[in-house]
Amino acid sequence: MPRVRIDEADGLTVADITHTRFGALPATATVGEVRAWFAQSASRRLAFIADGERYLGSLTPEDVADGAQAEQPAVTVAQNGPTVAPDAPATTGRDLALLTDSRRVPVVDREGHLLGVVAVTGDLQSFCGTGDG
Image (cartoon, rainbow, N blue to C red; front, top):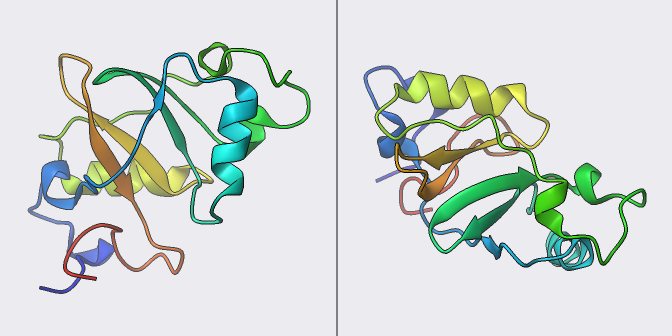
């Protein structure tokens, strides 16, 4: 099955387009550790902080730029939103992702569990993590 294109989101839910192969940094992560995580891959555009499965916030590379101290807990500079629920329309997830510089939005359920991410490819054509590719 090919990737789901962003113009094919009508009639789908966020759960249908969620990229579930992701990692989250622990609640104890420091700004320095998040910087190092971003440095490992250019495709890393949004870091998640979680306490177990519970979503605590997201960070972009700009959030951990030189102004923040390396030893500072990353959760103190993390943003709580936007997030999207898995049962929301896929168009809502797409639109939220496209409003951000990272082209990503975390998928969080009603209990606050981090389930994945809606991520739009660099060419703005498809959702990352959908299909076989």
